[in-house]
Length: 425
Ligand SMILES: [Zn+2]
Image (cartoon, rainbow, N blue to C red; front, side, top):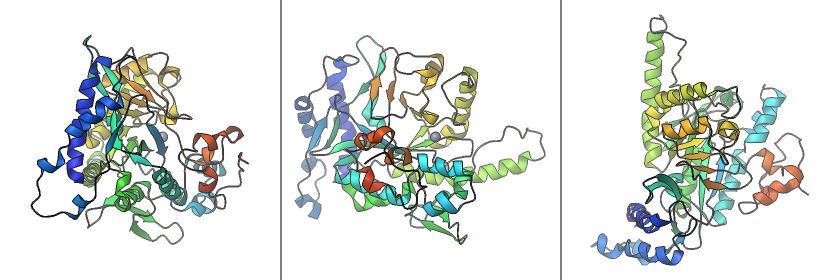
């Protein structure tokens, strides 16, 4: 039944979309739940489509009816960095500087905190959806393509949630600070994380210490958290390769440099090794976005337009060539191109859109999104469970911003984090 549903959902979405084309770009005519619900019903004639001669025990369980989640309803979006596998090492015992340790505290969560957050959002009725299905490009009656917020179909009583993961590159510094070191394909065909215990130097495979494998496992145990098989979006830079494989080029090694053959051979081996990981991630509901090649700050003058162009082409050559096309760009540092991507469309934004990006994600205090009217693009903010928000943010207000997902006071592990205090009561 699940496989069938997976096939039918895009169809029901497409039908809902075609109904709403005339409303494209305007506020007036949006598909109402009462319009779209019957479409979904007629597009899922399950009993006649795949008659099964043998009784299937699943058939006796009535399926949860799907209901429309309209364009006016917020699709929440949480993002994580890689999670800290060994928090005591990362926060206390590792030889990194105090500011590095506080950086981990600011922007990361520990494995235990991450597990508690997943459990909490699951219990509060969220189900995972794919960013690429939340918005899509349609051409209106005026012949101009624009992005449009789609009507999603979700199981009755559930709420859609996007999860994205920034910097899933397994940078060198993370390996020294208590994180897993790469994704690998196990003999069972599943994705595992390679990890080295920083205290014993023992290297082993695990599914319990990495954000990606933990979510895989969580969904195996709670398949209704992902009714359509969707997991998360992996936001990749390129300067230290991807997913723990050093697939990046080194342009300082010229074509005639004697080091070039050995570099190319090693790089090719890393590329060959990561391809099956990418294929398996895609098969199991993961998808990809760009985080720029060099984690560049798209705001301000230091990174000029020419730099943005070089960086974007390099991302395409070294990362896009491996993970396939994507329309999603996650701003490094959350920095909006040209200083403001909402009220204006500057030259960097224009270039990135022409290059093919349509969904531009920043960081904010809620899941704000805005379909731009002057260009086919949508900008959207994401919330960030991490030390800054778990500690409460300014005046403890972050506890409220995240209260629909979890109670920060029950999530944060103050025993292992640096003694930096909290702002909530
Ligand atoms: Zn980043």
